[in-house]
Image 1 (tube, rainbow, N blue to C red):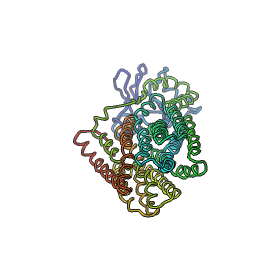
Image 2 (image 1 turned 120 degrees about the vertical axis):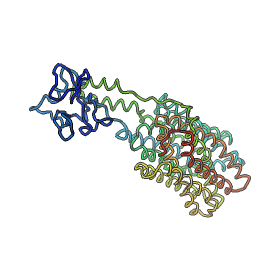
Image 3 (image 1 turned 120 degrees about the horizontal axis):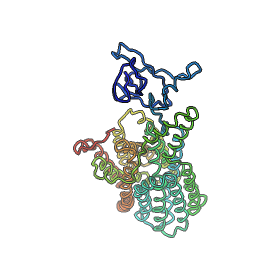
Length: 528
């Protein structure tokens, strides 16, 4: 049947030529009719241009239905397409053409590579900071472990604590400007640290200032990857997060070599030059909304060249297209019990993530390892971490396991690794236990972004991820000096690693309770 513009139905043979009609399409005739047995078709897409003709189908019980046939534009039948636009009304018999999405294809992979490089440079330096920590202790021999711990505490704290602010800034001014500005701050922090006046001065430059620059350069990457990827988001997050440990593989021996050949101040100047490359990566990164507009413009330009009549359809589609705007900060998440579970998890897990890796060189010295052996262990840890993140992204992109189960297992494995570290007496034993901890870190940092995006929405990432990192930053101010204090009080690293492992077990227990908390409080989340 067909439906006239005044709402009256009529059989296919009783069509009044004086009225305009819209065809009703049976569900089995096109993939577009998904909500009901029949669906009104208002426009025709560029991908599914079809000529719909009325034909009888006795088997279906319908007097008539619309059968989709490929549109053939040739000299023998030139009116096939134009006849459906009779009287200049493009709304008769058409499905609205929509520009293709810019996600998961083309330029999105270049953006992923740029985010990977940003993480490699910033987090690589961060992960190799255990080596820098021992060099600073040598440069300031009178400094205690607690005093030197403030450098690490301020670095981790500012890197994480400012995440909500940097996430909001990314929404307001865009990721490109944030990354460029972050790179300049990182480079400036190394240059300002060259005089090395005191341990407190180093805590400000290489701690607070460098941490703020890292936060400003890194935070846009988490949001950009969520914007540019949907179907391949798990794999993209694996690649993005793999840049962090891969940087550790490169920077751990690099810091040792620069210190050996150029001294402490010379190494700082060289690292400032490396940090400036962040500005280059930022210049090449385009905000997703801008990229989608470019994709749409290319689509309409090609379509209008082939079919000038599509100009009217373009404006109708653009009028009906609404862009979802991100909110810089959504404090309502602090009233969501299911989200508060993640904040409790990060409070416990921050004791070991990434302090267990940072203090490995310190523990290595207690069992007689040289600086080069320590750098080898750190590089191995980072390489294993990188491989685990890529593997995690690949595995969970195929939905073979629940994301929540993988996250829970990562916490338990990390706890076991921390508890076993004090039992190691050689470099190879340390490598075996470090492998367990690397697996934990790889899965943890790959899956956390996926969980937040799937359970609370990708558009809320500036808030959910920002607050998560903020709480991590608050804890990062406390844990490194406290671990340094415990190390000084006990005269070894056994007690600090036992503390880290115990808190990781606590994080696993809290996370395992999330389904029960969601059920009791009535929180609607996707327990993937």
